Structures are given as C-alpha cells and as structure tokens.
Length: 129
Image 1 (cartoon, rainbow, N blue to C red):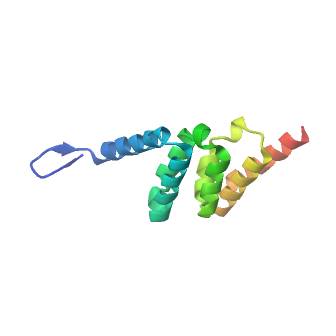
Image 2 (cartoon, helix red, strand yellow):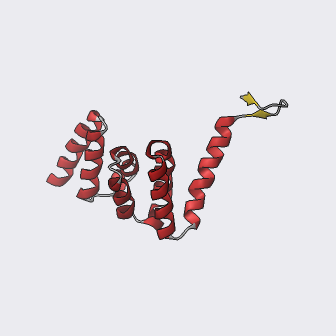
Image 3 (tube, rainbow, N blue to C red):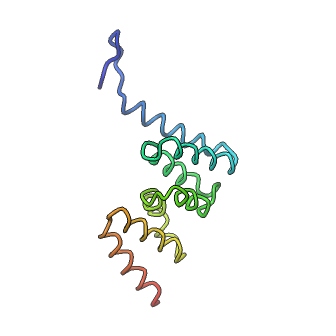
C-alpha cells in the first residue's frame, strides 16, 4: 500500500486491476470493428505494455470479435506471446487443427517447450481417434 501526498492511502495494484477490468469491459460495448481497431492501436503504441490488456479483452470478448479476427490481430504484430495466451483458453473446447497449430507455434516461439510437447502429444492422440 502506498500513500499519495496528503496521506491518502492508495493501493496502486487495486487501481490498476480496476482500470484493466473497466477497459476490458469497455471493449465489449464497442462494435466489432471499433474494438479491433482500438486493440490494434494499443499494440501499435506499446506492444509489450498493452499485450496483457489486449489478450484479456480478446478472451472476454472473443464471441463478439471472432476468434479468427483476434488471431489475425496478434499475427499482424508477430506477437507469438499474444497468440499463446489468447489461444490457451480455447484449446479444451475446440478441435480446430488451426487453433491447435497456432497455439503450438506460439508456445514454441516463446520458449514454452513443455507445452509444445504436451499439446503435440495430445493433438496426435486426438487425430488418431
């Protein structure tokens, strides 16, 4: 807990969490095109600094935005970390080979070798039937 001048107690982590959640919810109020454009601009301005916000907004609003559009957004910026975190939440509910491949690619490019091995093994078992 930190204090501002004048002694007002401020928990900066709480403020940051509230801001993040408010921003994610705000994306849900925008049209698909506007939300994707705003997410693109966040990544243009500061890819590293805004990746968490963008991934969370994509996850929570993927039905409205479309999974493919979110994948294209992260690919446009060659953000394998974004792909890895975004697609990780969809693997258990999707059998789409492209989603699994892109997740494995993101895991490999970000050094998540255990995930690469695990997912590759699981996916080969699913494909065999």
